[in-house]
Length: 187
Image (cartoon, rainbow, N blue to C red; front, side, top):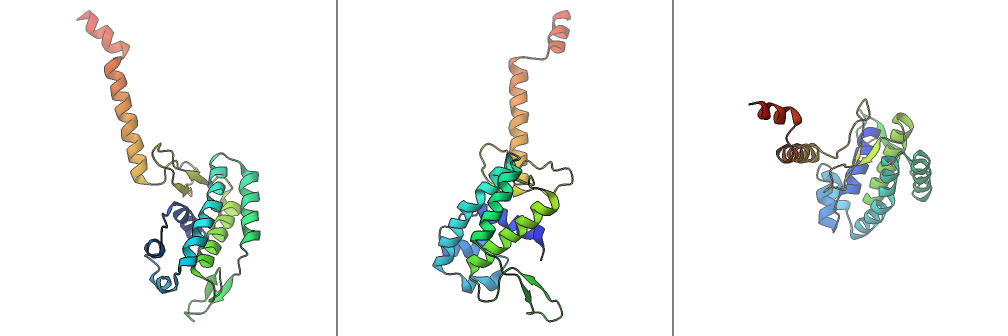
């Protein structure tokens, strides 16, 4: 199991706008083998889970380690995960977080919980965050070496940097630096 990928999928799941079965299939675009298994009940279950999982990211974003741990433990108790060895490729045995009979929702919930639980144990409980770009509320997983990630995407990072640059430029035009005023006065 690739727990970092599962943790990142958990963030993607929280950010997904799952209005119907087609939206869930679109969310699973890179996992086409799951498309035919999606049913309306999966959408309802996943939407409920999104609401349960977001507070974990919020707690991590404010460095509340105890709340991250207790929230994940509560979710693990509510949604038990049953890891199984997968033999669909006999030359590449590996672990799945749910058995073959699991619904798409159970699979997504299991992956999210196992990914986040392992990430918290391996990298720490403050590796989850909420985008710092004021117009965005997406969550993310921070796997950077120095735990410096602040934005959910390059797009939001660029948007925030451009806004900060423009704000600095406006401030300079309203109140030019004192060295410029002094040089202009001596001319």
